[in-house]
Length: 404
Image (cartoon, rainbow, N blue to C red; front, side, top):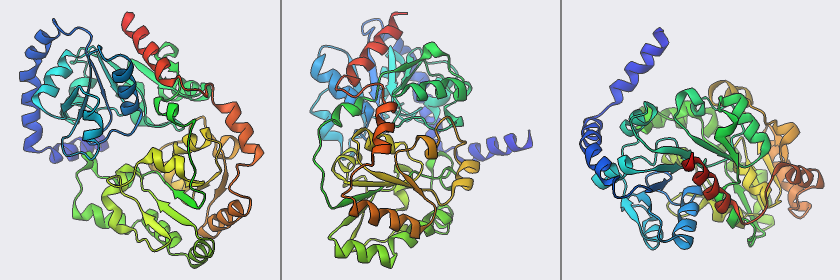
């Protein structure tokens, strides 16, 4: 009880004046949205984070606008987003966080998002309204990665998700047993972005390093202070990756073979990019300059840790390895292990040290950056669908939900 109260008080201390204004906007926009609903009965909002359009939300929105232009589907995004123009060309864009966004949220028949709450007009206050059931829309969770772990923040008791979309049968079972969703709330349709992964051109000398974030290093509500920055810089996470990036054997090997390593930190770690140093062989990638899916499609080899981005790479049957130097800490502080075992179900070898990781990179290069048959067989056994109909199945699943 004391721990819970302490957490609540900490969150309350982070609430700003803007959150109070957001709450007022939510309340004032409610009657206007419900009136609009009389005229726009089938309005959908499709979203990701407030400043991006690169994930399943964007690709599903693009599919809907190109194939069903008469449908009332809208995409909220900030005007200053580097992706704004790309979405605006499709039409039906609304400014994220605007009063119009608030009105349309109350009017929406379905809220379709890759994130729990981030696509709503006020991610903090709107989510409070959503999980308490005030908004009348049906909530569809597209996901932004395959659910591999027992991620407590996605548990049914913590959310109000009506349809949870999955990519594999094992994942669907894990969502049911680990997260508590009913079988009828889960549909295996494949990720909408996978429709773009069947055709790609590889840059043969590009290696991609794309680890996930660490929950315990990211501040509450994403409000970063100088103290938070110092904690990240002094963390084992940052120090280990800095050691790897500066490794002499790695850099000599990259130089000798004209290889480039693209280090693409997770979105939640992007605010701390200055903690990492690149060189002529190593590029530190920001989301302002690089697109995740493009990097995945172009790269010849992937190094990740626990990220579900490995499923995207595996879908293309390209080689990879996992760098898990902090497994015990990750499991105790980030996600508990779910149905997925990296040793028994993973698509590459596991390195626990920097030296071991460099060894794997050298061996993979010497083998021509080809995925070994052992992992090709795992890929074939994992994915239920390998086609261009993921968006189509997603639409059918949403329509079936709304018919009920």
